[in-house]
Image 1: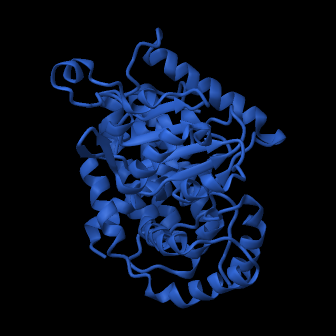
Image 2: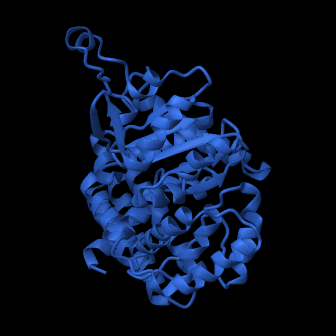
Length: 398
């Protein structure tokens, strides 16, 4: 793998890890958003309202410097509410049926449709073309759309077979519930911190949701970089895992697990993207663990987990990822050093101290024998503390 692409991929992974710090118990969804955006596939989230889906997608879109199109579907939603109104003037003067798509779903790079299965047949048929072919029909014209990923949510997957073809277009799946009892305090603390930041940035709620210029230089992923990573997915070699993947699929069929041929083929993009995010040019057995997010029926997930584990695939806990030393030292630590040289506030230096502390804890946990690497991180941590003392004294250091 080209070294520049590898660094770009690991940097993108770090951006996802930063995003996880803003939410409690949502690492799984962040990981799926990262994979989906590289694969240009779609995600279906099953769960109740009020589980931070909208806020998470907003943050993710800020990272990509874009705005999501968000809409709640009901049985009474009209196609114009999603795709845009008819251009009345053109219709009256030229008898041309043209839709004004400005600011609507056909022009969105990222989209979130709540209660996605509630749409009418006219809406779902148009959505099927849009998410599958990235095209939108307006009159006699067929327009290419910039859509990267559509996130659909629902309380449940309907049993209606008519919706099966539409549902299968959502390659990645996850179930989302309210946080565990022992995480409620963390939700309140982190949620209030996020609210404070939002109020400080936009007290009247009149902003457009984009990042400030300062934030953009620190966290955004440019469209060019994202496109580079999307192309790099195709360069990942998945041949090493194909035999094991075939055996897993055969076991799925033997147990009656629904897994379409289309889903089986497109899943290989997920494995490739997973390898890329880990800085590898070849897919490994561990990448097959994402099969647990590719189910068709949520009732099949426990069986999929068991079969995948039986084939020697490490199915880790949600959000757990052991990173290579290269990623920790050459990506994370170098980025911390670069940001330290540009830091101009207490808050920025505090954040850098917290990040080096997390890196040190990660090394002790995942690489206990790498003493020199730990000393390197601790040295940079001391340098950051000394800089804080030099600029601001001991007050507020801890």
